[in-house]
Structure formats: structure tokens, C-alpha cells
Length: 202
Image 1 (cartoon, one colour):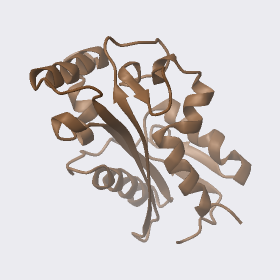
Image 2 (cartoon, one colour):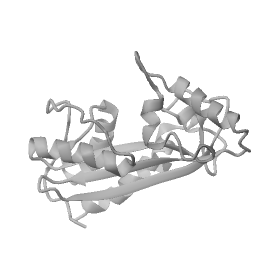
Image 3 (cartoon, one colour):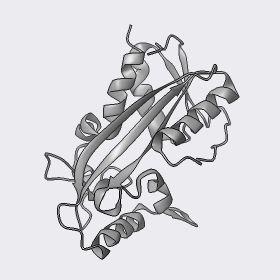
Image 4 (tube, helix red, strand yellow):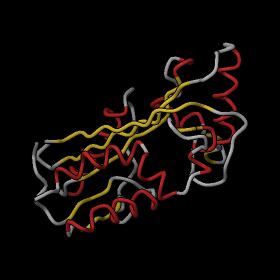
């Protein structure tokens, strides 16, 4: 594994929350994180059919455009009874002409399970894939996941995305009912972050 020795890292996201999360994670290593929006970078089209494929598109596009090493994340939820959907298309299921509507997306997902009369529990998992890319084209990949099941009706007002219908394994509450600190200890992204940090350890 290539070690990260630079002091500046481009986080290939326009999501301020993700950028803040990365800054907090990497601050102990003395790394300055800058976001794609700060660098006036466009969002590249995500044309791949896998999390790692789309994460690579974002990381390499950002690194090539700026000459900085870049980190990207691609994530989503896989539901077993509907063949792993929505998966890499998780955000697409929420798209509307007026922005993303995850209540609509969660309803669509549950209705798809109902149409198949899928037995309970309806197992699912969140996946996160981080790609750290360098300007010379090299990259390192870190994949994380958290197993669980779908619940209905939706529960909780915390979190975002599909959190109100996802109950992680070993818990009787959803991510949207869980203290954010606890969620961030067990989430798919936390799993991937733990692997990523090995790149930064001295």
C-alpha cells in the first residue's frame, strides 16, 4: 500500500458534510483538506455500475484537474430481496425535478419488496467505497459495509438518506433513531475510514 506523505488533500465532493467529516478524521495527521467546490471543480458524470468504479471516476478527475491527491466516496444501500437494488443507483432512486426526495426513494424500495411478498427480515447493507488517487494515476481502495435489515414504517428524524428505514445488525433502532456519534462508530463509512487511516499512519 502506498503511504500518503503530502500535507494537502482534495476531497472530491461538493457535500459540505462529507468534507467536514474528512477534516475531522484527518486533522490528527496534520493534513489540510480542501473540497471540490473550493477548487471550482465540476461534478463528473458517474457512468460506472459499481461503487469502486464511480469513486475512481471522481477521485481521478479531481486529482488530474488540480495536481493534488484526491479522495472520493461512493456509497449506497443494497437490499437482498430486490437483487441488491438500489445499490450504486441509490441516489438516482431519490432524484426528482426539484432535488432528491429520500422519503419517496424509501417508499419505492419498500413497495418493491412488498410486490415480491419478500419474507421478513428483509436483509440489507450499506456500502461505502473510498478511493484515494494520486496525480500519477495510482490509487488505493478502501471498502466498508454495515449489515442490517429494512423496517417499515420509517423511524427517526436523525441521519439522512435511507437511515430511517435501516436497522443495523445487533440493534433495535434505526440509524435515524441513533445518536450520530454512535452511528459514526459503526457505519459503513466508519468501516472504510478505519482502513483508509492506515495510509496516513506513520
